[in-house]
Length: 99
Image (cartoon, rainbow, N blue to C red; front, side):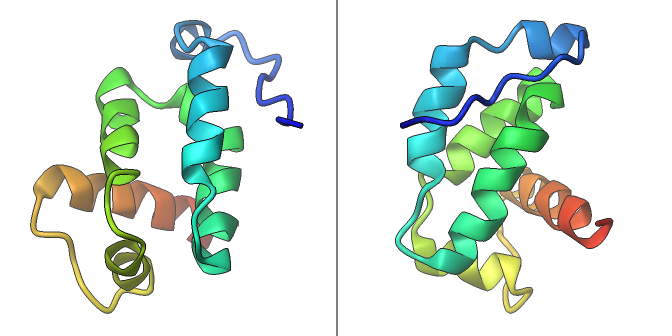
């Protein structure tokens, strides 16, 4: 069962994101590592819809990365070489650290 990822915020960015896109990304955000699941799934459910289109594209691109690479980035052991990838990693980490 796919959780309901919509919310009541009427931000125009959020209205532009179809449920089918978020549902598809939900399954791609489920990774082989629990640590990644604990970062990516809540980010998708709580923050993805409010991102600008460019950052949503960056998130989708992030999901094409290998789990080991993402783990290194999120544990701050490495930094992505691609500036776009570095940006979305920072957005996710900043969100987690602000909680």
